[in-house]
Length: 516
Image 1 (cartoon, rainbow, N blue to C red):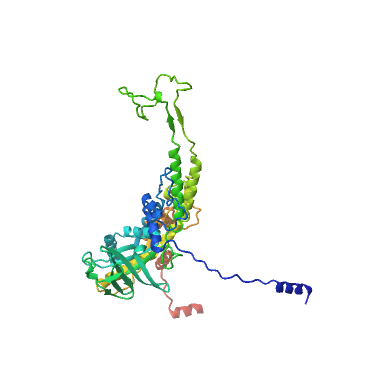
Image 2: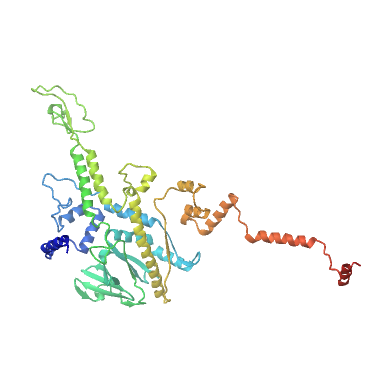
């Protein structure tokens, strides 16, 4: 063994590393799922009085949030809520639903199933589909998740009834990550709660008075409900979420998760700005002898900002009097407050939506290219929402037709559907035309027409437009066989016009060969 190996062996023998002792940590959650959902809903409602009252009762007061802080008596300030959380949610949902173009039921190549399309139009019209989807997106962004509930009520309609329940009104029963049933919670008078168990092939009802189960006939509203069974291949409830929660497995994650402190800081920055603006108002000091008096009793008149600007009186005879009106105003550092506000605003919007989408130009860049660059965060969030909504809509349409078939005692079958969404924050139509009209653009005429018109025109119109453009440019397509047929026809005509020379008799031919 070499000397170096011996030294390394000795070092290893002397270097003894003892493993760390196992330690346990216990962290108490401040809010459970229902409490967190209620907190997010309070932020979405956007009422300053409700925020102040909620955080005064918040379990964790050690963080000293702005909304939970109690000012010293005599130093109260006005607490203002900016309303930003509600603006974020409603703007994003409006962008997505406004771009929902159509729902297509393909029956074959370039054809649609007219019967299903007409039936879906009736169902969507009765259930106000767009408003329903807006509530669903808002609920998922605020609460975290929710579920569509389908039901049948012949007294109201012969078509399936679609309803949306936010995540704080449902319970999800899962086994190994797979959904087993959805429990919808409905609260009634007398402290009763109706639990509707929607599973695969069944709907069961359970009425609780407090924590005690009672019969469905306990309330008039639930007396007519009956448990039903149907085809076990589908469930009449469709859960929907945009993100998966990392705190509560199997549930959705709200867009407000991790943002409530940023919203609190933004409200504090704006409230401080308004308070500083209020305290820096100009103050006018007027000597007593310069204040106008009532001509009758000599009492001092109350100041009026509109007509008591200049007053001419006699000089004050007191010693050291200056006889002047002084105007004082504290310094107001608007730039510093604006910088603080923009920083808090950026943190509140980070990862959710671009300020430009809300009409906020924090960088003072007005050109179109800069505006589109600042819309990227909105595009990412919008794409996430469209992907989740497309999948949910496909399942919702499929289950709706299965429910309709079940109600009319028809065979249950799967329904394929295509969801078409428009595009957002694209260049203007004039800019696209200018780009595509450039002859150096490496695109075919078909690709240019499809890129220019997108989903606004059907395929037949696009093909006709391509033919018109080709005709204007002198590129007329001919049938490949037409030219060959024309040449062959002319050849046949020319051959038919020549004189026909009859064959010589056999004897004459032999005599000619013999030289006779």
